[in-house]
Length: 87
Image (cartoon, rainbow, N blue to C red; front, side, top):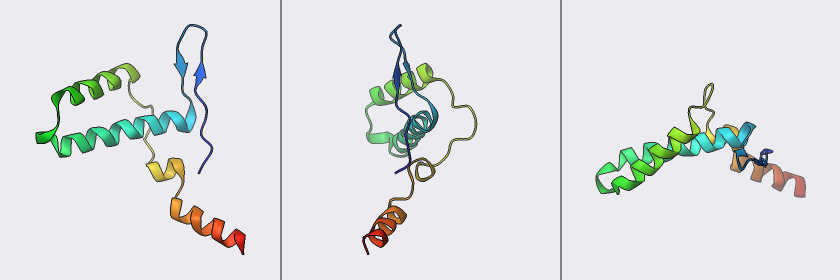
């Protein structure tokens, strides 16, 4: 797994999320939104409102959003690498 930045708690109560952690949060929101829209007929409308409110608070991601594998690393490659190190 790649290094993920920690969130920083500020004195005024705000939470600052930087780097890959911020990008991963936006990726998760985008993927959740796409999945909810894909099966929209059986989903509670409150989930759409909640997700939209969260996106409104966070704003837009600046730049192109990397894939989850780019952010976290490929788990299969990491498993192979770990197995090779054990030999």
